Length: 339
Image (cartoon, rainbow, N blue to C red; front, side, top):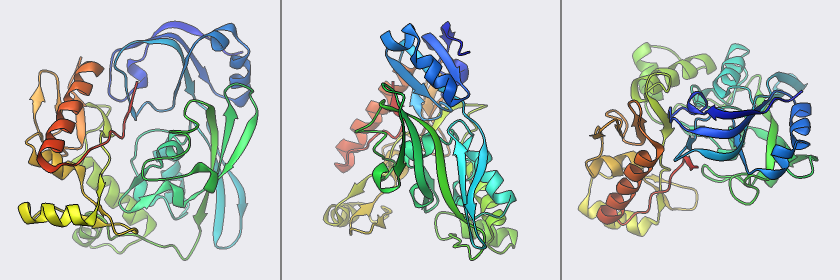
C-alpha cells in the first residue's frame, strides 16, 4: 500500500541541503508501488517531481505538487559467460554501492566512476561520467514506466540517445517515464583499465601500486575526497556546470591571450575546456557570499554552508555564467537540474 504524505520537508532528500517543502510526497520501493500510486487522485491531478538520490537538483522553492521518491533496490545477474557479465540494478540502488559491488567481484568498467553521488536511475538520465569513462559505454538497456499509461518499456542503448551529460530522458522524454532499472554489461577478465585521465596514474605511482580495478577505484575515491566536499558535511550537488566544448579555431584564438588554457580534443576535432578553470580565472574559486559560495578546492562546485536558499545559489550560478561569457565568450551550461 503506497502512502502519500503531505507538507514534507525535502531537506533530507537533496544533497544541496535546501529547505523546501513538497505539497505531497510518496516513496515507491517496488514497481507495484508505482502502479498503485498512479491510481490515486493525487497522482492524477498534481504535477510530479521524480527524485532519486537528490544529488543533481537545485530546489529554488517549495514544490506545489507530488514528489515521488524512486526507491527500487537490488542487483541481479541477467547473463554471464567466462569474460562478461550483465547485471540489472534497481533505479533506487545507490550508484556508489553498485560500483563497490562490481569492484568487490572484480567486474570491470565502472571503477573510474567510484564515489559519484546519486542513484542508478539518475545514471542514464545524466549519462554520468568521471575520469575518462561514461556510463553510456556500459549500459545495455534501461527499463522505464510510462507515467501516464503505466506501460513498461525497455530502451536500448541507442534509444537512450546518450550525449555528454545528456540522454533522451533529460530532454525529449523528460518527466514522461519513471526509470525502474538499468542493465549494464561489465567485464570479468581482459579488463580495459583507464588511468590516463586526471591524477589517477600519479596517485597509483605515489602509492606504488599497479593498475587494477580495485587500485583505480581506490585512487579515484582518494582524489575525489581530496578535491570535492562530502554532501553529508557541506551541501552541494557535485559539478554544477558542464565542461564546455568549443571550436578549435576559438580555442586557438583564446590560447593566444591565455597560453595556459587547458583543452582536450574530442572525436569531432572540437575542444573541451574545463569549466572549473574558466570559473577560477574569473575569480570565483573559494568566494563566499553569506552562507553559500564556490568551493575553495574545486570551482565547479557550488556549496551551501548552511541555511542557504536555492534562489541565492541559482543567482550565484547566473553571475558566474555571465562573467565567464564576458571574459571568454563561452556559454556555460548547468549540469544540475533547476527545479
